Length: 146
Image (cartoon, rainbow, N blue to C red):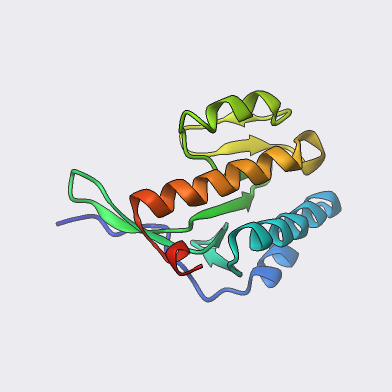
């Protein structure tokens, strides 16, 4: 039997989540700025995914193993130590952009930043839009409606 996905879209209010979960004023401000930017870039309103991820749009994935589910097209989580940005698809076009992003660490599926002022917002926009395009081309995606 396939394991159920831990991260699913919820009905929790995004603003309420930020106001109750994020303690530092700078991180709250950065969170609201990311919501504004990602909403504009994606064309989707923010939704909570699981307890701490703010996602924009959704797509359906299916792996060769048979595991499948839904995930946000792009998103972020204002974790205690740093932001996790779910905005990167490792394509040949997007890899060189990382050299110009600014101060970050790379995880397997996300980019970690301390604050928005550490990165180049124009490069973040390009990465987000490239990811939206990549997901649209390779998955069943709500972004096709846009």
